Image (tube, rainbow, N blue to C red):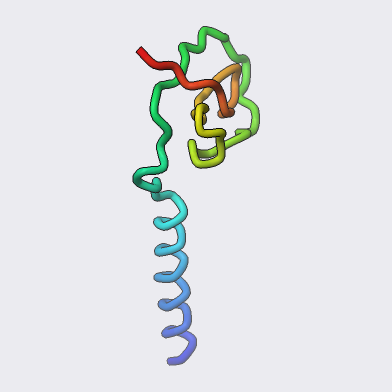
Amino acid sequence: MKTIGSIVFLSVLLAFCTELGSASFPGINHPGGCPYDNVRCIQSYPPMCSGDVECAPNAKCCYSKCKMQCVAAIFD
């Protein structure tokens, strides 16, 4: 019976950690937008960032030149 309880506990813990890891952090998005990217990609490359929090204050994490990377934010 302890084994079933342990499996249930670990399953719930795994589900919680997965949700927590995919959550966006409110208030950490930098102002501005991503520049238009007109590069045609044959494949995508590994990301250099996963959110604005990893970029400089004047930059955003955007899909640019076939990968997610920090680029200068644009303001309209």
